[in-house]
Image 1 (cartoon, rainbow, N blue to C red):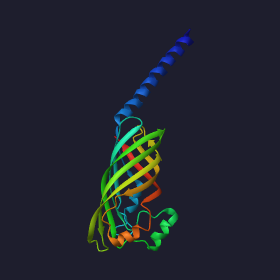
Image 2: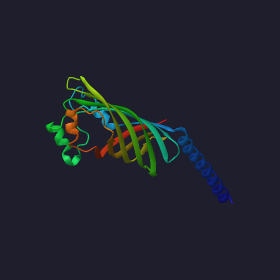
Image 3: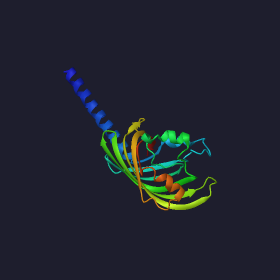
Image 4: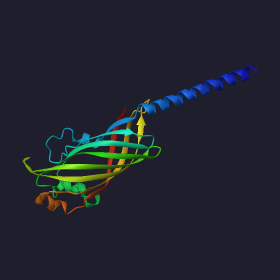
Length: 214
């Protein structure tokens, strides 16, 4: 009889604990609806100063979870290009940087604010679409402005979400991008001559995003 009472009390205790633990997880999920993240690649620009190949890349994402599967966000990004973005890995991208054969006669600065949609597919696996209108500024090597233009930049991502910490508040997202751009307007002739040699897309860009939920 005592054993039955003990077993009954144990089962009741475990049941209460499980319910409380489930409630804690549920409460945490409801608590952290927003997230902020940035690509780790921007950390590589720190300390490079005025180097020719410094992209001066800054990028920030602020997102909100609509539910467990759907996440929408706003993306802010700015960077500086020293050669065409459409040079593929198979074209010897890294070799072109070393040889400087495809360098612009100046720089292309691009800045924009866009939107993103992220869909959780299975566990941490996700797909993301980002649309980023960009305001372009062309400058010569003396940092003198040449002209302005516009570009519509889209990217498609496939990655995995890894959460850490007691409340799973911190996360990393390794992923691959495929980038494409349209309506590339008012490009100076010297820059255009280099751009037209290459594609208006870039395939399989690896990246790692770092972020936290709040």
